[in-house]
Length: 418
Image (cartoon, rainbow, N blue to C red; front, top):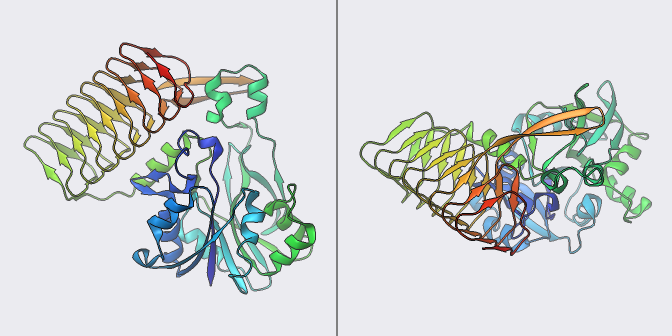
């Protein structure tokens, strides 16, 4: 059996993190999300993969090549225009035969869930579902027994938030609607289909209004579409979701020390240190933590709980980093404190930098929700010394911030705040 992996999209709501790479190539636990997707398919013995690529396709193709390094066979089809998942899947119509699996390249499903999906009888279609409370960003499913009735796409709350005057941190898609009344069964975008789907897509027409979910919902009137449920599934729609994926991946981290550990270092729990990395004297690391190749931490730094640090990055002396994802080639200066944040590749923070987490509350009609926020820093930013970044701030790519500043508002790409 083959799998079609949909990896053509940008992930606009994840900006600025997707400025130079697609959503599927964002790193969690120091590996691209898409790499975990390929691993899950391989573990259920699906080795032939058709990957639909588009935005920043070279990064995907250069990383995975023909798939041999990852134990699979990968061929590529380009979606030249971003016209949705139905259009993306249609690009693979000449590459599959009989039953095949469709998997998003930017979400994490457990191998056990994929095994369940593979039990769908020939002649039926299958869809993987999960239950969550914050469901406005997904299609809600109506099910009878184990059969699909309908997938109902919900209106996103973001436009309502913008029109209501809610502060920009939320209006820029750092928020998802939460209905406190009950959890909702939602569509994960993972399917077991057959080549009949292409005739259905052609019959409806691949116009702007057609979605893959609407086509599958329509097909449920003609044949059984079996619903398989999983509790273990994660997706990243907004930048803060990346931290949840990172935490989930790091929860499986095993101790693996390939770098240099200097005298006086204390390591508690699972810590992975890549080749050529150095943990300098008297630093304390409390796992789960993943530190990439060639990176340097300390001396006397404190790294704790759900932190990944990419390749060739530096966390300076006496700094504190918690619940944070740091990508490749990042510099965090001495005496800095970073909490609950994402720092994209190539950025630098000067000495005595500070990013604090905070509780942010949103009230809209009868719904009240809170979210823990740090900051999002885009790629190739230069932040000078003694800069404080308040909770919920987003810095776009290539921003330049002068010394002794306190950042309270978002900065678009290329901003100079001197």
